Structures are given as structure tokens and as C-alpha cells.
Image 1 (cartoon, helix red, strand yellow):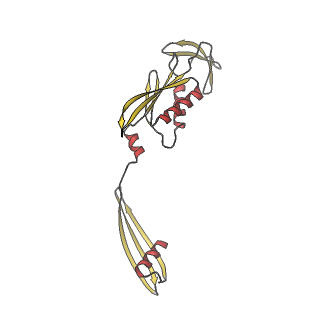
Image 2: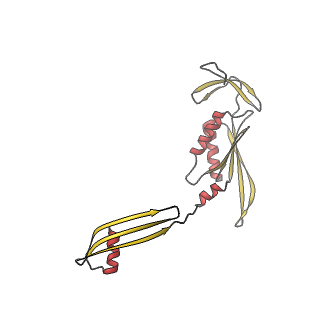
Image 3: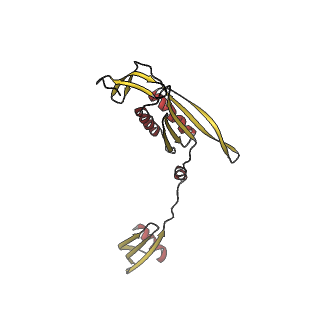
Length: 207
């Protein structure tokens, strides 16, 4: 209502008294444009007027820089999750993935994940993001991580690097007790390059 009064005063003079008796609108829209119809009934200096107008709005679709990078598979770092002398369990990889996503900042994103026989690779948007994810995985699951940079190219006179973050979950010896989700298991045998055999301490079942 206020915007209508303002427009009427601009047309007929700011000193005139305006009373808007009614305001109706109709909106028709599709993917690319919208048509807005307005019908105004008002009283100006004791004279009743009624006017109808229509405005067409065209939508221009644009993709933000962050979305463009995600769609294009952009990445700066790869967090490579492995384990010492064994294959990480599905539970460990699921927990590492959850930790990674919970560590993302507002501007961070994961552009791709690759599940490999030896572990999981997570492609991330920045070095800081990859370093933060690696630190949190090690803090929660144990182990260690290291990083190495490789020159990828140059832009605006600056070197562009891609960074690999090598996260190594700890290896376990026979007899080690592990807590995985709601289970406590004992490591029975470590098979180098393949994984390990465990026994559920509550049920005696092999897992």
C-alpha cells in the first residue's frame, strides 16, 4: 500500500491526500518470466479513480562461482584415507566420510568421492579444507597424516598447486580390542594387504 501511495503522489503531487480503497494483484509465471497485474482504487482530492497496469518480469538464470566449480569437478586437494598394513573397514570409511562432511566450512565443498579397494579418496575445494578434514579424522579415529604438493599450473603469475593429504589409520595387532559403533571386537588375525578377521566379544561371531 505504501509504495502505491508513493507512486500516486509522485504523479499527482506530494501535497495531495491519497486514500487507497483497494488493491488487487494477479501473478502469472513460468520458468523464464512472470506477468504481474495490479488494479488500484484510490481517492485523490475527493475524486475517485481506478487504474489497472501490468508489468512483465524476465528471469535471468545465473550460476554462482561456487556452484560452477562444483558442477565442473573443481578441486584443490585430495584426502586419501588408508590404513597401515590393512584395508580400512567399511565402518571406518563411513565414519571418516561423516567426519569429513561435518568439518566443511560455509565456502567448502566436496566435488567427488572415489571408493577404492585400498580406501577412500575425497576431492575437496581448498588446502585448508583438506588439512582440516585430515586433522579431524586423525583426532577421531587415530593414526597420522602427511601432505604433499604438486605444481598444477600458473594463473595471474602465481603457481597453482594441488595437494594430496595422506591419512593413515592405525594398524592393529592380534588381540587388540576395537570399538566399532556399538560393538566391541577382538582382532584375531591381520592379513597384510587385505584386512583383518575379528570376533564380536558379545556374541562370539566372526566379523
